[in-house]
Length: 557
Length: 67
Image (cartoon, rainbow over all chains, first blue to last red; front, side):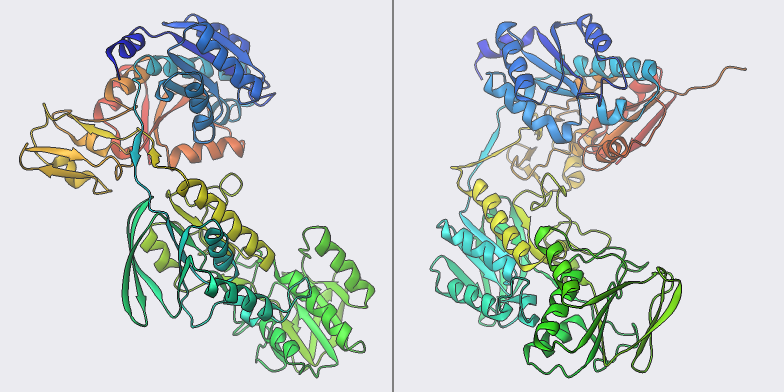
């Protein structure tokens, strides 16, 4: 950066934008007062209150402010930087302001929303927060983003419908894919299923997909193989795969986790014996082989799900039960089919219609009380029917337990290997359920299919294609640009004590014996600043969070 | 005495966990006293002891480091 540019930043000209967020902020504190107050703060030359700063018009206001008032720092007082910092800082960059000269003040999630009904106090706190943000922003420095290379190859773990769809879509974009499947065949859980909800044969549909995969030149498939080790970072991962022909080592740019889930085997539930009382997956097989002899079939929904042990709803079992109930009614119209349920989870118009069609075909639905679950004994299912306030007893030849999908037993091992989180049930946890449903918080690693949460085949396929698009958005760039919020060690004052070395959780610091100083690998550095807090000579600092910047923020309390 | 003690509390919250939790508190509309203010840091391990002393110096009654 030239000396002229740096000189431009020396005398701060700060613009403050106060967001009403409709009534989310303005409904609980006085934004106009906050804006008025901001005008009195040192170095502030321009203040604007917006109805929604993140809207098109709000962004234009910021960009116009930068140009018209020659701003060299921008502060937005609105929601959380965790969600909106990237939008605002990139908007500043579009207007020609270095994005690292942007600072955000959280007056919604951590002020207006948590001090409802205390308008004066909340307004006062918002003013203080703005004052602190402005004080910090005055000391911000422009930064250059860090660039690194990318390997245009992807590792897909799991060859079920999600993994295959992802691999196929990626290969379709001429990206190289390594597809690793633990079992000896592609297809995953769908191999156990009879038909899809669309009426399509499940096995045929996965075999068709597997056929396309095996002839696709950009996909290198490894069956009966497992990923053993992963190291590196986005754009540059080293992976080792155990295959029947020995270990294979390769380099990839991104990783897709599509390891799927398994159906819970209902051992010990509702007198399960695999003969008179079977699981839904066993019924799928009976229907596939046309050997259903029962004349009276009772489905019990939520078997082993939505209880203390497993609180979640597996989401697809109601649809499977209705699909199979209808299939039985179609093939064997005289068979009596009853479904005992807690809540029917038939989401979407198509599935809702399935439920009505099933009722029309004569499938009967009874609600049961989870506090008093149905009892299965000797060809009889009895339960308390709350609607009629009486005990009902149903004769049955076959009881089908709708069990939930549960995470694979090795999901935890994969999570540890990739350093990605799982939720309280053991499913892989995405970065954000709504904003980033297919990403992990770790850059360059993605998730799709039932490993994330029970999904239908259509959803797994859609997620696989979605992941392909997320990956392509990274790998089709010329190079990887990384946030400049990383640590820096000043070699002139570093004495090479190596105190920072052991503090760095990412092994991003190494000792240079020639210069006798410690050095940061900026690509590996995640910007935690542990080294800066440890360094006895204050040679290490975290860009954007330097001690003087933080102390200015605290000093403005 | 008579007057209610309203402690000024400064929280240093890790961007990746506690700060996100504080956002979640907002989204869930969990209410807490306005005398608590949060300063975002990229890791609780990156907090220099000087920050804590500075907060006390500036009149904080309590400092919470969360991460």
